Image 1 (cartoon, rainbow, N blue to C red):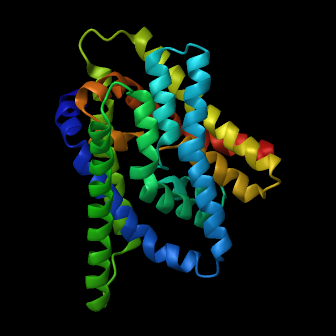
Image 2 (cartoon, rainbow, N blue to C red):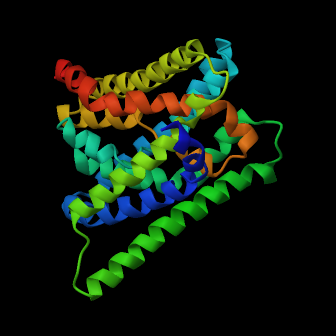
Length: 286
């Protein structure tokens, strides 16, 4: 749908806000029931994993990439992916692959909540020429987006609970699928840029597959090294590789995000193939 790509590209920030809103409506009641018997220690363990994955990992990726002289766009893409929180559909992907859905929910909730803080040192590394005050802007924009979407969803839940009604899960899933499809059309707009050669698309697609698959493999191998259960190995692998890099589209200036648009478009491919390829990959790890 190339005719719709550019208009939907402008609507990406609104789509992200709606998806966060719908994700809270879909996951929050479930997260209460799924984590009712989960100890404080489980939440602390999840917090440690989130900090390692969104702060320590991107610093490691940036350092290794700089030493190896990785092309700037590739290094930028890999670092921002590593620093991003999980995609809103990560619990669903994990459940499709028979992983620990409750752990994925905790990771999603904590990772999204602390992103405005964890992204600051990463953005400073990637854009050292920018002043500290300018670097606070993306963090504040992300904070406003997250707080606004989550706060609106919680208020909506409170109102519906008083009215003794609840949003149907199937309706929320359907609405999320429609909004996500609309956003993906916008994310793929870079593929329709005039003069773009298929060779460039192929190279960037390869980079996207390597980053997504590499992070999934690293997460799964780390889980096996820690002797985690099969369920938690699947969770750590899937969530580690499928990150919501599109969030940065709402916060970073256009001049900074422009080089990443083709990568973000290509990154959708390995994400949506995760249930198919992951079924074979994670079964081999059992």
